[in-house]
Image 1 (spheres, rainbow, N blue to C red):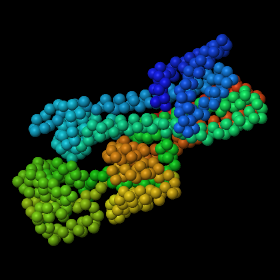
Image 2: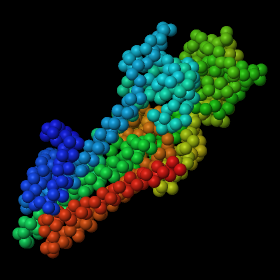
Image 3: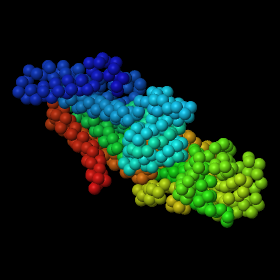
Image 4: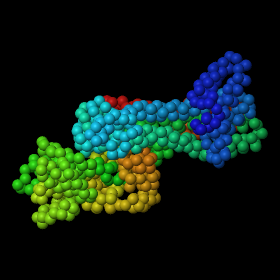
Length: 627
């Protein structure tokens, strides 16, 4: 639509065109009640106002598509054929209002993006070679270390490598309570450091940062608003042939061009060109305020029809981070010394397991010395020197890396702990002496179980968990969360096959966050990505993005999709019933073109009032949550 406006000259660009044409037609319609001489001017402004609709209709015909503009062009033509100025003015006034709504929606998008990007710092303090320098944000590269002091915004997505801080993430996640960040924690760009000083190693910069990805999502949702209009276009494709048959039949039987014109005037769908986008605008705006982005109205419709809900485990049903489940410490080792050694080994670790061990160590050891001579063994563990001692933390393979003998007694306990907990177990060795072992587990999201129970009450027929983990881990997590069905040890291609199987029974929603979830998110009827911790690939592939990573938004999505679909179906029902009455008035000779145009204009407001129900619903929900 906007490309059309550019091709026909800047004078016609919104909102100037809507203000001039709409205002002039309103004045002329009122003046026409006293001065019939204004009719030529009314026809002139109506003709000028019709140009964008005519251009779009011609383009849709060239593309062999029936759109709402194709539908309305018949009514516009009818009003000019019978030279009924009021009819033409009523129709163009409503279509101008539709274009104005379109401009308003897009301008809100631009404003939202502008306000969002204002939070992004323009400079950052980079530490390099022991020296600090303030540089433009564009010069920060992945892997650089930046210093973030109290009162400053975090310039990049990254991992804290030194210090601690209290960070307000409200601008990005919607959570108003500041979050404590220590070494190993992730931080997001454009969040505010309220107190403390920390050093952050950049992991995502520029267009890959969270704030830029959020802005890109909002822009994409705006671009995909053309899908919003496709609901109206589908409506036009269904009813235009019916109206053509009725009008053609009336003309064939009566040879009355005025009656034929009146039929088109009654059937003009200018109200649907406003009512359907109005409903979707309310729904998408509400979704954004609640922390999830819907990339087009087609996905609102799909959300309301979900039959099967499929969820990835790691990063979706769980945090993708770990917590300590159990620890066994050698008899001659004190807990303080044990955890001090573990904390030193994992102090600057960026691995999820290492971060969880460091956080646990801070609970038990008041002093965690800085490590030196750090050796990281990919897939097995880490070895460091701390306070003059050689400390090794990792799985059984780290013994081979360190060329140490794995004690048989420790091995038997290691296997027993794995069987007992079915989770990752880390061994701790100091100066070649076995000191103990620690079992960690992926942490389920606290809102997951209640959310899934609520989805069942909403009538979701099937809830399935997909995971690449083994069957024991899958069974434990699914039981804890009340999930009746799971599929374990899945590869990306297995997930695609599973979705194909489920889609034979109805609409399938897939919720995921990782790179390996991206094909499934793109394949599902509606893909839902966890946007805060999710990968850029997953967010790009998804149709809906939960910016705050809160699963409790899922029931809201379903309810919003159903309510939006209900309102739009109501709009169509109102249009159909009012048109049946209008056709009866025209075919019985009661209504001519002028009355038909007035009737159409008067009944235009019924679907508009119906669509505003969504705005009232949003207001009620907002008030209820505030209370």
